[in-house]
Image (cartoon, rainbow, N blue to C red; front, side, top):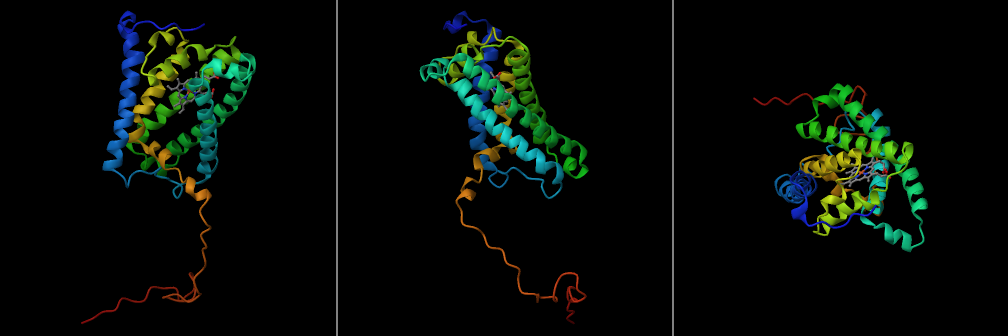
Length: 259
Ligand code: HEM
């Protein structure tokens, strides 16, 4: 199925709202929101790690979520930004593309879901993390979970259990149209509901992005890979207060009283 370009005036109001106005508004909030956040809150521009408060769940949940996310993002770049005609032109058949996308996408999606599940669980179950959960976290975690769960549900229902759905000729056409400034809402209106809901929650996630801890994505410490080692050495045994922590001498000196 290939989506033909329809004049926007022929598209009904609801479809214009859902597939043109909302996506562009979310993208505008994404762009302007980042500038605003950078100018107003550079010291808060971090992942606000809670590793010191809880690390057992984080040790597994965080790498699973992040590695899954990297792979899912890679899959989305190929699936949404690269037209099917380009992959065909380099000799990748539709069947080979589809099989690889579903296999790799499923592994990555499951890693992301399990990792995110662990990150959400520690936020709900560890009292010290729960009390440090901000309003922006309360928006981010449900929105992120909805987006990820709807994405994996669309894959499972239509492309693993179902007969296969060619989203590259519908959802991807709509997605590219937005960035080409030639919106094609009609390309996505016939897509299955799970794909539509996934795309809409993703738009809302983009709008929420600059106001949450997700801004840390743009400050990933990639320089760490090339930076020289930092050398940590213990200081000499004698400290201001005594020989080593725990020794009887390791006590703060009594305050000096001056009369
Ligand atoms: C408007 C933006 C987006 C569109 C149009 C979109 C579209 C899609 C499509 C078509 C699939 C099905 C792939 C398949 O069946 O092979 C999918 C799957 C998925 N999406 Fe998205 N997506 C978007 C943004 C996001 C975002 C922001 C996230 C996560 C934060 C995400 C997470 C997932 C996951 C986990 C899957 C299932 C695993 C996979 O197939 O890679 N998506 N998405």
